[in-house]
Length: 238
Image (cartoon, rainbow, N blue to C red; front, side):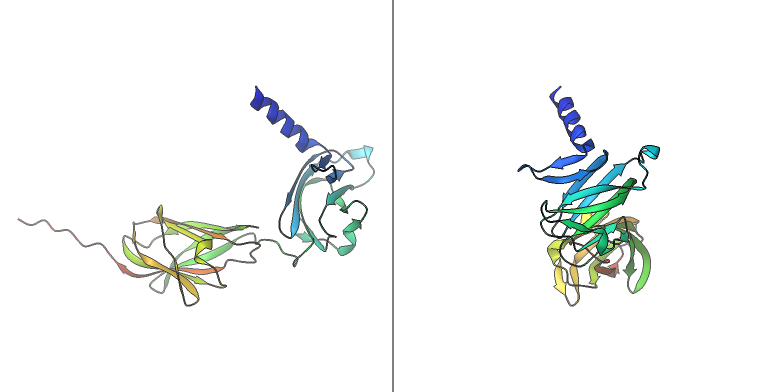
């Protein structure tokens, strides 16, 4: 019973047109009711909303949305489209940015620091075996990093594993598993990271995770397998 009551309370807060911080200042308020979410990151507020078009009751194609920020807004995106600076009006007495946004379901990035940026939608990372590309990993991004998965027709056998990087990346920011086997520990090697030899099964699945904020692209240029030693053949003897 308690769990059901808590769920109803959370739903009521999500559907409210005004979200309020613990000290009483409004984090978000809207001129129309809908479903809203606000998440604060180190340089931006990430706002999601769904507001239905009220039709003939409101003779406009947008509604007013106010979002509390620690500093005046410098840049913004509506979904993946940049917003003009004039669209980010600052209400200094409230500490809020005032926006006129369209009906429907949308995502806003409203930044008060740093450069305007969005995570890429996707990328492909080549998988190389002894200087020959054998497959590609499909990468997906969010603001906190990247995840890439795919098949790797590499094994069976023992091979060295190396990541070629397009930008510096600490070993602690990378996680790679091959067929469920976690690769590591990683050691810096030139412009990349290298790991000890790994036993790879035939048709293994690769899963690569990178933890880094606001990536503009994949920091991993290639996943490289080198010096593959196939398993020894077995012969029956008398």
